[in-house]
Amino acid sequence: MSFIPQRYLDSTLAVGRRGANSKINWMGTGLLLGRLIAPGQNQYDALLVTNRHVLEEQDAIVIRFNLIEPRESMDFEVPLVSADKTSAVTFHSDSEIDVAVVKLDDSVLQRSGVHIQAFISNLDCYPLQQAGWGELRSDDSRPTPEQEAATRERAAQFDLLPSK
Image 1 (spheres, rainbow, N blue to C red):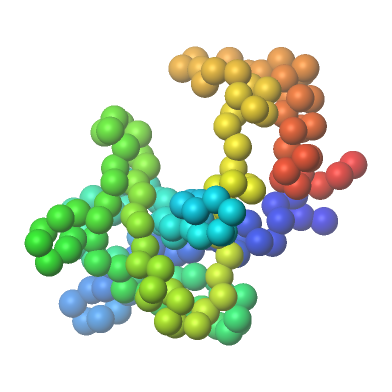
Image 2: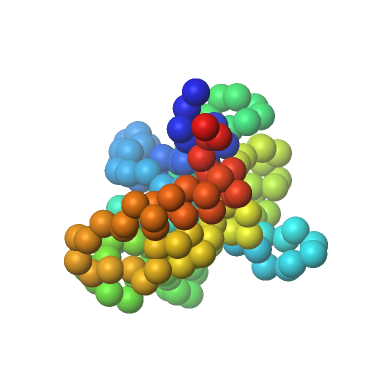
């Protein structure tokens, strides 16, 4: 049995850029996050979460999903700069933190007719404090065995771990 649920693996995507000869140069990976925007209506923004160094100095990228239907993969062109030169990328405010987020055009994904998986913000993600880890630490200290047990209990409630 896999420790990571299949739907989490299916939420992972490849990130690349198209070269001069139209060949795609794969540069990294990312994940698809569905951020709840309309509680009660199950409406989500589709966000690509990846590394800063993958998106820095790029005007456009290509993303490749692991698709549920159809089973073969599909590439999507994603502009990172709008016609008015506004960046579509949000980088972490601390330049030392290698995280970047892009809001994807939901209509392009919907028109393509593909079925994809995403981490869902109100189902799959929860604050570390809720998991029992308390404040994030700047040092390398490890949680106590009690904190680890509490984290495993919380994660099991969210279906993040296989049951023992």
